[in-house]
Length: 332
Image 1 (cartoon, rainbow, N blue to C red):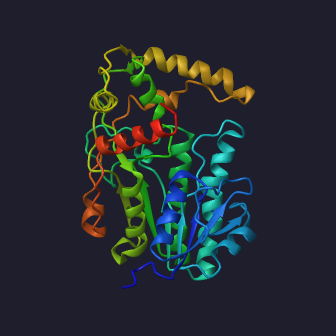
Image 2: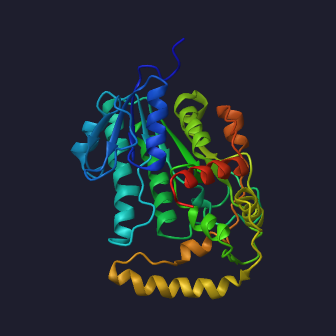
Image 3: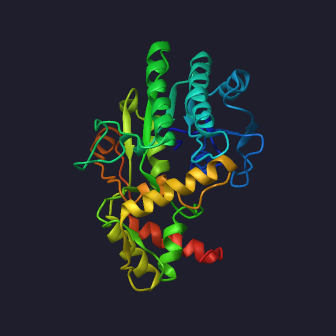
């Protein structure tokens, strides 16, 4: 029997990235007619041949209109995770200005649903966990601030112009193919990992396959219209628990070394201040240090109850897969 997405025309922005490419592949496997929007110089190597690829600039009105033509559902995933050159202006252009142009183009094209990608980072540090979708906003850097601006714009403009929308706030995204957490895995493997702070903050991960399932449910379910959903995994370990799990998976001794947060944060600020004017990616910056200090502990009850979301991959199984993939690629 044909499923919900069979023969539906869908648009995935940011389809050259890790999350967008996984979403595009899954939608194609579900029988959707997938249109992938990528930057002119963007990657497309992970997209199957049946996916239609269009190049363009999401800040361009004409490109947005071309992208949404005949589209049933828009999955707006495009983002700039970290940008040295251009600073905040680049983040605002992608996270805010492009969202405004795209959602207006979607309404003119008669799109059924606009699924906007935000981030759990809009909540910042959750002082008394678990948090949920109503937890106060407390973004901690330009990335999180502009993502929040983009989310609030999508919700406001969608209501004003009559474009049905749903917002997904992913937790910490990971999986084979993503190398960000190698910054933690490699030092543990080599016996050189140093915990910054006490290691007690929780970090709520979401394995890429679970996140993609959350996206599909957000785009499909009538109960999702006009709602915001945190999408995470079934476990949310403390950083100490995460480090121990990774060490066990690698077959090495768990790390014990620690340094005070203040010392490293000051070093990160200095490093960023020196590197930023030169357009150099700093090896240490406050955002990286903040990973060790902010509690990210969320309740997924809303997504479970309204969407039927049921994440399957906990952090231990997920990191087992990441480590296996990293070894196959010669990265460990």
